Amino acid sequence: MTAATNAGDALISPVRVTSPARVTADEVARVTGSIRYWAAAKAAAGTAEEPYLAATLAEALAAARARHAGRPRLLQLLDHCSYLVDGEQVGSRDHAEVALTEGGTVEILPPFAGG
Image 1 (cartoon, one colour):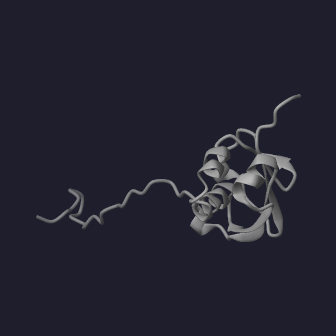
Image 2 (tube, helix red, strand yellow):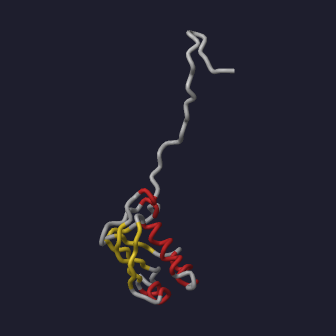
Image 3 (cartoon, one colour):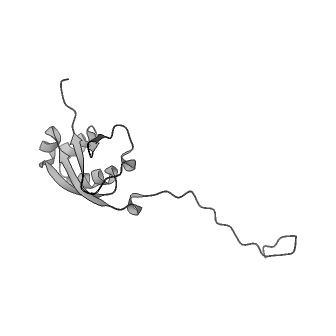
């Protein structure tokens, strides 16, 4: 059986339907910068600063988690930290949507006691 229209018996090519394009971190250029750990995060990481190679905050944090897999306190703490990217508060934004800049800085701030 061949696909044909009733009007003129022309062949019909199948149409492929795809979902809307979605940009992934792999398609965005990775940049280098620094992650700075503060207070309890610094103690848990065992370092004050380290480099990143990532396109987004989510990617940089995933790499930091992998690099510090043997530091369970840091892994736990990262879920409760506040983040600044190039001095701007990330707040409740999706970390996968926060782009990093070449030479930029990610600051990891653990919860602080007091006011």
